[in-house]
Length: 345
Image (tube, rainbow, N blue to C red; front, side):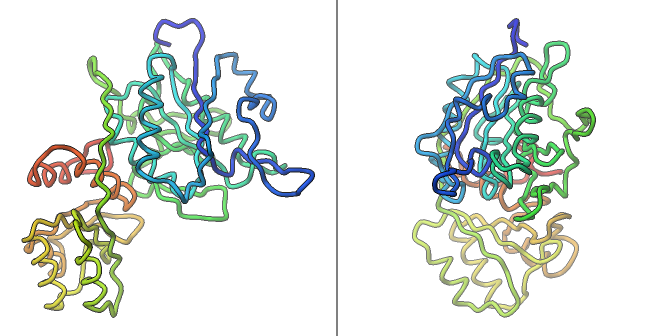
């Protein structure tokens, strides 16, 4: 690719289950030296291309992921972008969808693959899913036709399926098929061969220059509605000092209680400048604030529709937009459109 005789892939190991193996002396899990990845997974030698690795130090449990971590990842990709044909990021599964979503906004005009993957079992365990996930992710990151990458976007590969990263949610803590993308089809499916669904892949048009963004605003909150929620719950969130945005996880197609206290408090918050985004609690489907009275009332008081965005992508999109030097009205316009394929409208 890109005029090179040998395809080159950079594997970035951030932490997570995939890079662990049992210590025979203690019986506990410990990370192995990822520079020796081809010793642990000798099948990688059969690819016949250049495979380099970078490991975070210290390694990070994905439950401890922060936006500062996303900035480090963006900088790693940016600084190595011209040297490699594709990137594979090994990541703990718990917050992988958040990271994939963030990268999709922070790295724009991509013309190379960034594939995130991990595993439910350590790579050193006999029945591990880690080897297959790693091998397939690397193959996808290197895949090209006529010198062009087959999947030039941020994606997640897990258990035989490749998803657009900002469409995913981790839905199972125990099964190998840990991720789902209910509102967008797989970009590829791995069986005897890897079949790419080209119609659903975002291919660049024209000569686009890579853009990276490292400014994020984290002062936002999520309110998941539930029957019987009291005013004190909402008051506690709205009283957060410096709160810039609120994601409300609503019922069904974007519905919420019509009780006067709830609507009044949300309306006052919107009038004071708070961005309020309506995201459905459902795994599949979309917010439609013109379908029922409960949704219509939210729209009337200035709540914005998240359409079919996931909560993970909504968090990342708001952090990204709030971190840019743009007006509140510009943010509202961008929330209503797809930036990186995160919503269907």
